[in-house]
Length: 114
Image (cartoon, rainbow, N blue to C red):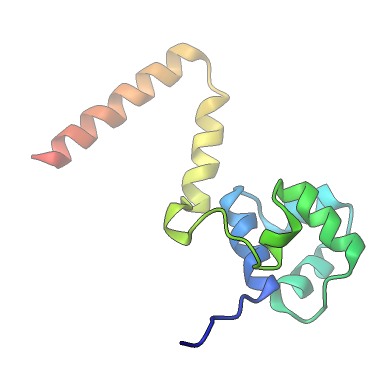
């Protein structure tokens, strides 16, 4: 059986999205130009030890996971970026508004179950 090769650029994209970050946000955290981030994700540039370390720190994963040597999360476990951004905004709301919004969502979901 042939082993599937993991491409670091695709891993970076997957992990970045799992953290709810855009390319620009990740580049800012790493203190590198946004254009470099796009080049790393597209596989145009090879990862060096400094960038690999910065990515590992920024994404809060091991370098092995970035390189595809070890997988912690599967693509099915990763919520969409849009959903993550909305959840982050909801968490910033006052408790009473959060409660009200969640009750509305729960009511809607109960209606979908029927």
